[in-house]
Length: 360
Image: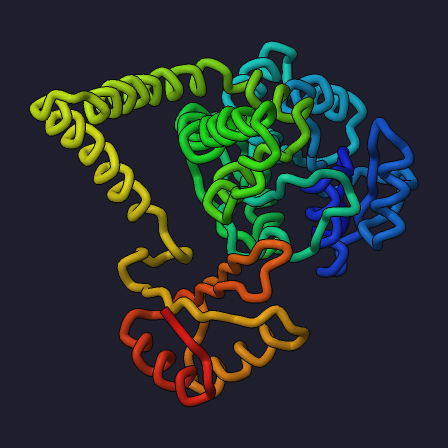
């Protein structure tokens, strides 16, 4: 792959462009907002000039609702030999593009499973896709050369290709992304009218739960609109669990001992199912959470403390798989959770204790 046109210079499009330019690919940038394309270009993502010849691949990095029109227009221009997109919904754009006479032999849908609650070219990173899954949704019409071009794109961006049917992809992202985003927004909306003294007690739990609620509402209206029925079905399933939780909690607040006992069983069952579901989320690609354990270390709020902790961890010869920092403004201490391979936990704890660290 020698040259690529990236259409749309938001977080994902610019990150794709940065990853490709780092691999020596000539990248051309196009955006309906010329200022965004110029910013991406100034970051080293590519050129805002139009390509003088047909490029190897066009990457459509626009909201799902715009993908069909942009894709068909690009094909009419003949700007590329092959085409893909990076929209977070696949079935509806694919169907609408077909209705607009898209050349499906030269198009394959794609979705890198990476991103951020922030948007725009200034948030882009060349390593955004390193190690992440990148779903490709070929159809029976997709040409072999087009699929190979998409594979090459994924490889150059450092991601792992995953082949899925479009409908299965949309159900999956509805389950792991779209419905959770709405739930996060619903929880965050409870905080909006609450008294300041109540909200000031918020800790890491509610911050983690509502993190994605900070994302651009207009962008998410487009995403949810393209996958609306899938998300509605998932929320309907969720509402059944909420009804059970409400019933159980009201029973637990009853003066009747039998009702309290019944309610506790309902709530306990929900919590156990939640624990079991959470355990299915891999801690690292290709692994299962049970292979890891967490070491929680108390850390002071002074410059250099995190660096000292990581240095002492390295002395133990232990690789840290994930790091989570729990700290609130105004506190002089925080907690750092280090996820490590389970059989190395004791080694790490002993080393850290020998260097004066306190752990939980």
